[in-house]
Image (cartoon, rainbow over all chains, first blue to last red):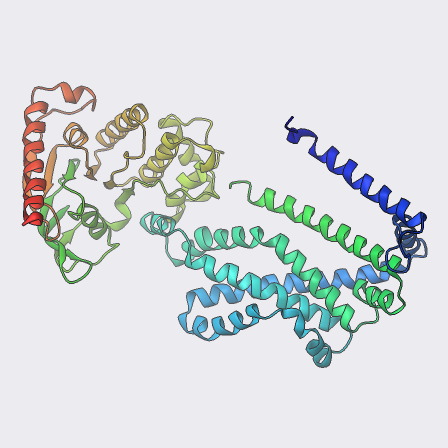
Length: 251
Length: 251
């Protein structure tokens, strides 16, 4: 019998609960080494502990500040450079190869470099988030503007619109649509940048806590943090999705 | 509008050569001919969207008094129907609130009362065509250039939209230059039909006045005694032109 999609969420939930149950049972039966694979109840306890003593808030604040700072800066600079490069051929000639290079390498390898340049404070994390987001947004906008629907451009011109009207009514809405379409990926990139930056060298943040958990061989704390990062990013994804649906309600 | 000895080329060989035609005030003129005869290029040259190799194009009216209706409705997808209609008005200095009121009037006249707040995605093909028509009529053009504007519509919707177009251009005394593949459409709508030869180096080979009186119902016009003989003549001339080209190609 073919399963209907209607109760897919319920089946997924049951399967997940079963998996957790098996994991927990295997752990309690002594089949898993808690040093490497602590059972779910230990992970939950570690998570509760993080919030119970209030220590987590300062780390969450550090990661959020770095990720959102990099996200906003990356979007603004990515859009600006993308527009300028699409409209001025000389800028495209100079900028496109640099961006292609930056796009070709896994940009997180720049994390240690940013620490040397900017120190272990917030700036190096914002910089890593920024570079991850800006390169992606640049290509989204740069290629997007070149693919703007020419019929819309002609329509504005034939209705009497000039360069200003073209930018306002065709280019900017098109750019907004592409950027919003990439917003979820950009959020993921921004958090990756912040956490990896903190992991490399920091005194605060979820990445720093991960690094601490690693150095103390605390797998429960590490898995609790992974879970927390997943929940945080999923929540921001949901918010970005709502924003996208609202602003792109015409599409 | 006057076109004299218009020659258009996209490469070495002209696609259109020494084309001359006239559209007098309030006249409906059609251009028919085989594919690749440069019919659409004549419209683009009149609109200033392409620079001809030679000849003279005198639109006879200001560029801001020319409206264009293409096969694609090319409505801005992020603007509602009424905002799309209001665009040309705001470009010409009409205050936004008044432009939107006028847009509503035009939508009402074209049977789209209550559809003003819909985005193009939520309109049918016929409704979008009417919005595009309202957009063009709202700028009160003295000349409308139409490039197969009804080709994408199904027969019944097409008949209704065409009827609206004819009654509005007759009422507003607008001159029209229509490009079409459809000989019946050309005769039933026009006061005058020009036939182009096969391209490249296409020429206007004949001009047929249409002696069907106005005001005109495009469906009933097909029952007028002058319709069938004119249709036969045009069909024979067009077939002859296509056959001549095929013979030349085979040789």
